[in-house]
Picture 1 (cartoon, helix red, strand yellow):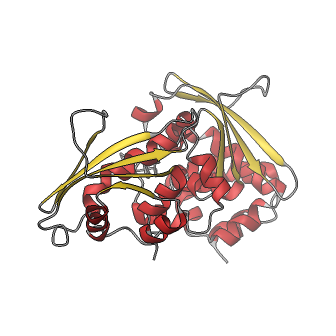
Picture 2: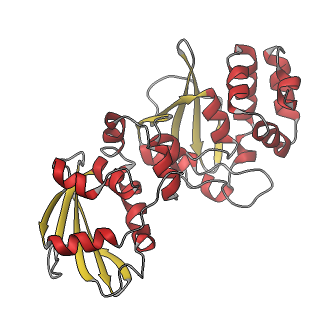
Picture 3: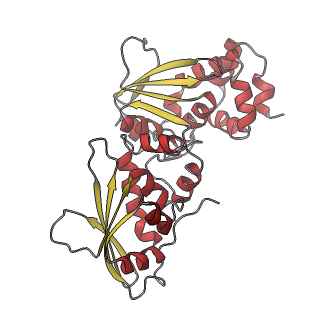
Length: 311
């Protein structure tokens, strides 16, 4: 039995709130970190424990927040906690570097973040990445996705000077693991929403890390990516240049830079391709990846990549 269970299990809402409100913030984080997901989930199924813990944590959020990032956030955020039956909504207002938890649920919020009580507790104590939760279908966003991610990036482990996780800094292996069993419909929604530029920007920023210099030795090519699925029906365009083992991603203005090959695919298929879940040859055969131009160089470019693989 974890120390957290022995302290809160079976206690009433006021007692749990009092305990969470008075413990040192570092100890709150340590207690949660030392308790398994299954045990935290069972605790949150007790309404008194859940409400007491959530209410107390909301009142202490400034202690879990990076002040620099907090000062940059402004807006009203609803955390809608999913329960076995129904949900519970908690509204926060971020303004002037402060967090107001005494906000009436009148009118719409700027963004609604839906997640389980377990994921909420992990998120606000710096133990979960909002971006990965969103990609993995464990968090959904309605409204201003960038505000939701900004909020997800403000929390840090007390006693440290930096945020514990940055939702926009997505480790490719973690992304590959997060989307391994996610429904296509969910990924399509993500890649058609406000999180899309974050995902594409981070993958292309890291693209040079994927190119194996030894495999790319002697290869000179410019590969254009045409990624569909934008909400406006358009495409995002990127150019990847490889020259003798060195890779560079440049802006595709559509003019001035000749390209050897153009790869066209949807946002979902690009995400799967970049995380090792879509074999490029099978993608071509199935029609989800279209290749225009020098197919020999396209194959050489593909062969030079060491894509992240979920362990």
